[in-house]
Length: 577
Image (cartoon, rainbow, N blue to C red; front, side, top):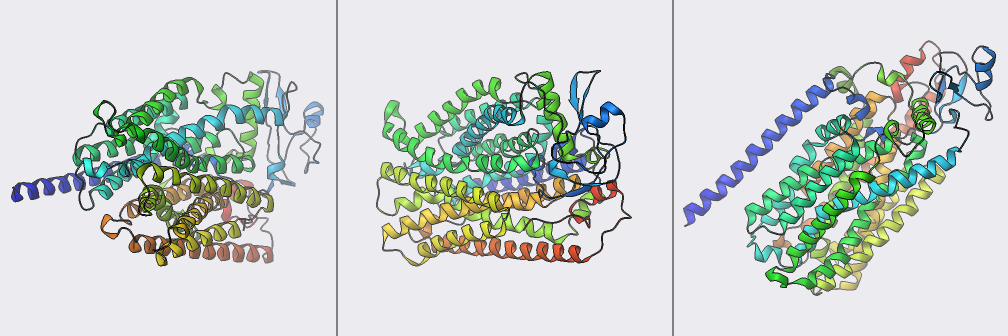
């Protein structure tokens, strides 16, 4: 019996390692093809999420422009524009609005460029129309994806580990296997979404991970749980980058910040919603012979599948395919994005040399560690908060209900931080302050073990701090990456490297360490300090770079194309602090 058990364990471990190296090979080959441009449009995909990147608002670019008056008179482009001049013209051949941006002289504010809005509407009205058709559906989509990802933590409170006879670190291994396909299949997923329509691809993935979630409620052993968690990670891999990419296809950089923060904070709503739902579903324990934790997976999976069928018709496509916009509105949205993003990015495909050159900039490495340090406490809380709360002496139902308020407060605090970060146009203080809040929470949990009320308050601080700092860190780093190549590679690095932290998070809180979880709290504290130190180093780096460029005379020898190719390395570029 012992030898057969050990043999079975050895085979399971070998299978996992072979699977890991196979996925690594697939990832390398996919990246190789993407780098050499064998997939058309990979530049615009931006390694998954770079299309929503925001650059500093005050970016000065020399560019000649035709105003509407110039178009009528045939005069030369004006060197500068006043606020009341309209950029762009209405093409008589196709009756649509397009930008006209020839080369020339003159210095203008890049974000103030605009094209003529169709006469039957205004830009504000059109943006509200787009907001109502794009953001809510993507938020619901990712909310359900995150819910199906972390509801295993709620299920564990209802004796999942006992019923499946999970021992040792098997529960942690089930959490870890999710991240193997999740990390490696982000790029292939977005390539397929580019080839297909977003409504087809995203709704299909949503339906599939809903089916897998239902299957999680039917597993009978550790092997079945591993298999379902693997496929859940596979089908959810395209959700986060796909939604980011789609948001970037609709909004300019200066507009995407608030939408991005709201979308990102849907994870906190998922945590709150999941706790409420689990507390209600958990009362179905014994219904039709199924345990309460099984009904959590089954019913939440069914909800996802039903929503996915409706979202096939509701998820927005790309602007040029949006049937709910008039032809003039579609052309206007496309034109304003073309003006905002520039044209040179699409003139050549990314090369290996371009990708390697990005990593010569140490600020890019710092950006990865900023996010990496936050992922571990964030996922640590998401996966283990119900288990921590249960050590306070609550019943499973009470545990789920007590998990809701910290998530709700985290959402409100994240919105507060995002608003004031945008209002002040400053990032550093709004990353370090929430990190300090999370550090305070973990410090209380690490040192106090006999006061459940104070420990519960500490969980509020952890959730509020971790889930408020993360969106600001991502936006700050991405907005400071100029140039399509640097944005694509830099963003892929930050997100890909950061998600590796999810694997560490799954082994931070082990059953043998309950109820004090000193190792888990210590690990989270250490990585929060790493993130804070990386943010400080990045802040000092960009501050020093800005001051050096201010003292340096303007380089008039570089062409506009060369400056665009340099991106944020251009001498005219100023980083956001």
